[in-house]
Length: 371
Image (cartoon, rainbow, N blue to C red; front, side):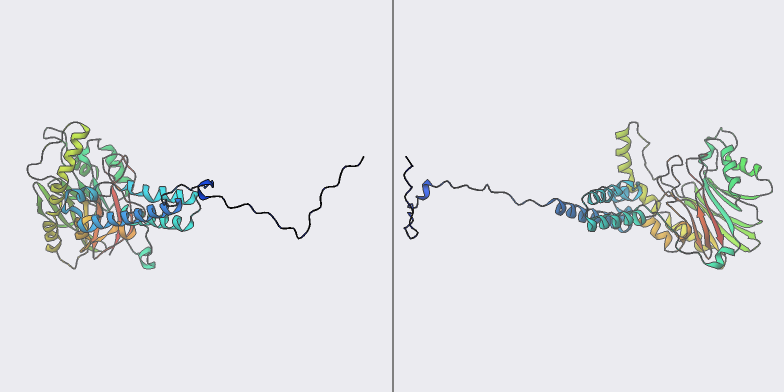
């Protein structure tokens, strides 16, 4: 027996519609409220802008406020390596997230730090006539009273073959000590002429035309020597800038106490440096302006701040002109600061470099000068 056929649905039969349910009976899915959150690349962009603004602010404070306040004096005189961490880390994050624009901005921040904060220098041009012009090699060296011995000092100086040597801290390490490093070096370089004033000493293979000294600060003196070279006379000022000030306390024991004392002493010590600009400029102006001038020595000042800007307003920094790299000279085992200089007026450096040596707590600075 066949099953009964299903009732056929008529094409035009009306479709039954269910009545709408009340609102309370409906199952309504409510979306949770979310606070607006910046995207990852937006946060990275904001951090990049803050980093660039921070680098610009550091540069402005170092060069235009400088030694006027204690915090900015610390900012000026302390090493600047740490400021590279911000654009470096943000640049690596941008590289990982493939944010090309942010990567370029952080690279620009690194270049700004390297040139204007860290002081990395690249000589851009050397004229053809300077390559063949005769030169005089000048070496400046803080010998630290020969506390590490004199043999290393002698070897370091001889290896550079200088024509003029400017020494700082060339006196005895103690009143009852042996011969001063200046005496030892003068005996070693037989036939060289020399002059002394305070703790500075200048030696040269050229004939000494004249010399005199000027007061700087306390027992420190500025030594002026005039040398008769085969290319004409040259004036050399040998300088060792003092950092002490009246009523300065002795260094305390313990890391925290020493750091707190450094923070307190930063502005008075910086002001002591600024006070020595006037006597230094008086010594510069005292000589014949027609004779080429070189001012060399340990200035205890990095290439930023009010003291350095005052010097470069009247003198040219040989390293900034033709040095390659940072030019850091202190401390010698891990150089982090450029505080030794050779400045010029009426002469130009053809080359400037820092030899490697551990004979003192400073590295020597050498410049080939033409005039």
